Image (cartoon, rainbow, N blue to C red; front, side, top):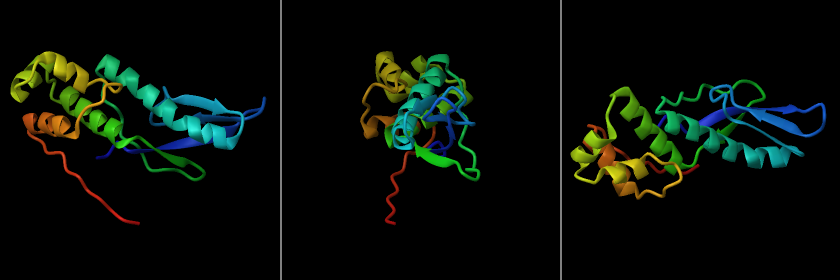
Length: 143
C-alpha cells in the first residue's frame, strides 16, 4: 500500500499551541494546545479529511517523502486499504453496482465497503480487490 504515512507540519501558533497541516492532503488541518495534543489530533484530522475524497469520489493523493522537520502520521491499516480501493475504483471508473455484481454481493455492501466509518472484514476487502483484478496481501515486519 502506498497511502499509509503522510508527512505533517507542526507549526507554533502565534496565539499558542501548534497548527498541524498536511501538504499532500490540504483538507487535513488541526491544532492542539501542546505539541503532544497536536500529535494525537493529527491522525483524526487525516482520517476526517479522507471523508471528503470518499464523498466526492476523488483520487486520494499518495504521500510524498517527508521534508526536514515534518513528522509522518500513519493512517490505520483499515483506512489505508479502503483508500487504495477507492483509488482503484476511481481510476477504473468502476461503478459500485458493477463492482457489486463482480463480487456477487448486493450494491449496499459496496456502499459500506467505500465508507470509512463502516467496519469491513479484511476478507471482504480482499474480495473487492480480486473482483478488480488485484490482490490484497498481508505483510508483517519486525523492527
